[in-house]
Image (cartoon, rainbow, N blue to C red; front, side):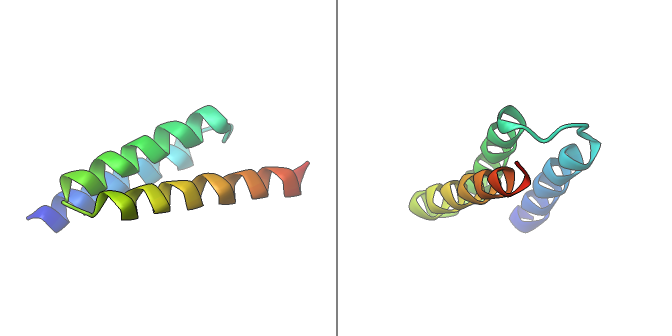
Amino acid sequence: MVLDKLGESLKNTLSNITKAIFVDEKLINELVKDIQRALLQADVNVNLVLELSNKIKKKAAEEKHRQD
């Protein structure tokens, strides 16, 4: 049941990315918060959630710099 809810939350978050016209820092921050919320509700370790969040933000920043 927890995994179903986690899967649905992550699916909704990814759907928001595909609907977005522009992927900017504001959108990335909102998506990271949604992912954090979903993972924490699924009882994922807080440190792991923070590590994943930082990696997502770092990767997004690297992609932005590569496109510039």
